[in-house]
Image 1 (tube, rainbow, N blue to C red):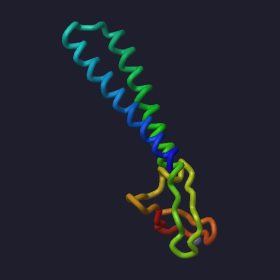
Image 2 (cartoon, rainbow, N blue to C red; image 1 turned 120 degrees about the vertical axis):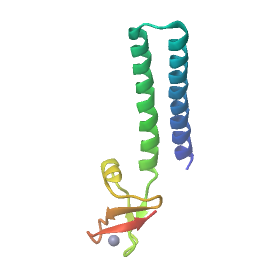
Image 3 (tube, helix red, strand yellow; image 1 turned 60 degrees about the horizontal axis):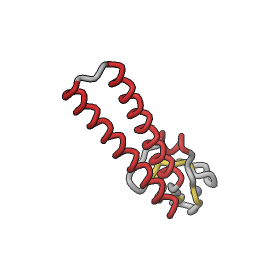
Image 4 (tube, rainbow, N blue to C red; image 1 turned 90 degrees about the horizontal axis):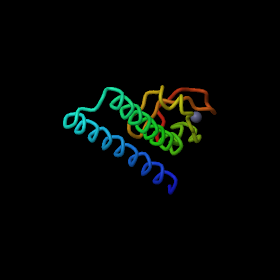
Length: 108
Ligand SMILES: [Zn+2]
């Protein structure tokens, strides 16, 4: 739980940082007219920070996602790939239970 909070906090912080850099970039660009290279470099840095933020948030989400089979109540921990490819709602995911080997809507 503690780890989840920290991951989310870091992710959100990086998101905000990326948005701030973006805002500053646009303001500066309109005011002083930076060169294309400068804009490109800052945009690149922004994208890197943004990806890191997303990575952090996604990793935290995947790490803390545990589902339970509705039939046998087996604990299902989807892999990152499975997590993103499967159909999902806020508290349910369409996963394959490792015990019954069937795909079902599993609750968190
Ligand atoms: Zn099952």
